[in-house]
Image (cartoon, rainbow, N blue to C red):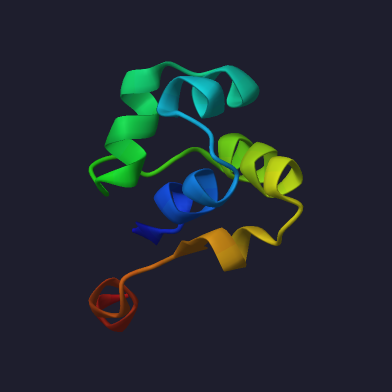
Length: 70
């Protein structure tokens, strides 16, 4: 799943640790999400949406290939 975590974090001048604390997850989770190696739970996606004041669809986008296979 593609996401805008890294860009949104950088726009706010936050470190990965800052974002991890704000979302109550580990820094390793943030790293994995930013690299696209981990898809967050729905509850974490909603937390991120609230934190960034954005719709979750504006933060997370499914890969087009994944959608076509379903």
